[in-house]
Image (cartoon, rainbow, N blue to C red; front, side, top):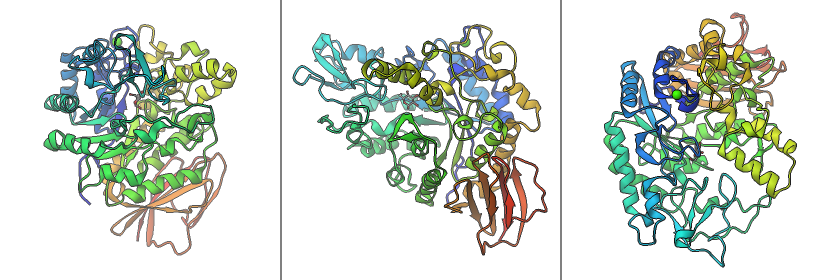
Length: 562
Ligand code: GLC
Ligand code: CA
């Protein structure tokens, strides 16, 4: 298998708004990030992925960009940015920028022009359509609730927005749009960045007919228009062009966030022969606790389903492409609350989840605060929430579907993206040491116990455990390149798998429950000798690996000679 630096790296995602405020305005910023680079270095991070830092009116916290070549005032200046990049590189780390090119902000100059008249030179930068029988051009529903079409009086037409109405979709059919994007990407790469995380990249090519959807979902919405834009008709053509004009000129890392992607489709993007990207972010494991794909419709997750999803990805991409490994990001609830136990086994379960994930084949992504075991939050009122998606759902459910707020709040506590966006918990001082002002979003009240200062100094902390996990990866190529195989596929409590490279094997045994299940090695499992590699409890090293009782959320990894 081809060796690559990005296969051997661990990536850390920073959501700048919530990371560290340096000037007391309550909003994280670039100088705050610079202050904390040594912390990331200490953790062992190789690559930092920055959520958007570009100029933006912040309808969707920077995922609505009004100028791709400017830094958001609240975050700092271009000089600050350049200094940050230099400081990152000085420490031997790399930086990957977020690339949001499915849409811009409606305040981007292209859109300001585009909406002025039908013959404006920028008109075709976006997707405009006349109404149909006095209504929207189609019945598609946006990801953030409501129609995907917004009427614009000036020209008596509608524009398409898959996300909020302040995020009009770019028209990728227009070669000028594509060239603008490629030029902008090259401009950033010439500023010495090391790659892109591509936002919603597999929805940029749409079915130009915009057909109506006939199937309603259970909520009565026409939501499933995605077959008309997910992996759309020209997606591979566009990405091949992007590769040829931009990506192939640099030694960079690329990862595409992809809606509804399945492994067979992903291989087309990431295969090492004629693929266009290095990795994709899929959502399949993020759907296992949702009914009918509706994230707000909660259901307990099923370990067998998790095994199926993860194993399919591991095996389908084996020898062909490369996996990304993540449990959290700025769009997802906190993994320890979601898949672990954030009460009596918070520390154990966070370590278990980290180990289970990092030992698979792929590049692991750590989202800020995950290394501290930060948890979900319950804000007192809907007024305290900021997330565009959460507010859209709340409004739709209360106004259009007549639901009681009390009925909706449990879903918000479990799934709102704001769970991941509470300020990073640096220490036990006021506002968790995030800001000396008033934070833009409420701090999780548990910062007195859960914070970086405590964790860095505590040898048994999740932070120090993650450091060890990351260090092991550097010294053991088997973690990066070993082949994955699932064992005990029907066990409902234990997720166990192996990694194999040459005459070595790793045996990973993870208990996903607060019970004490018994692990039994499959009969005839080959090994000559074994030693403990990493574990989240004290283990008697002489204990036989043939069979043992696991403690709540216990994980053990053994290294075997075979
Ligand atoms: C991606 C981003 C998310 C954003 C959306 C629209 O899913 O991760 O935060 O709201 O795209 O840009
Ligand atoms: Ca600030």
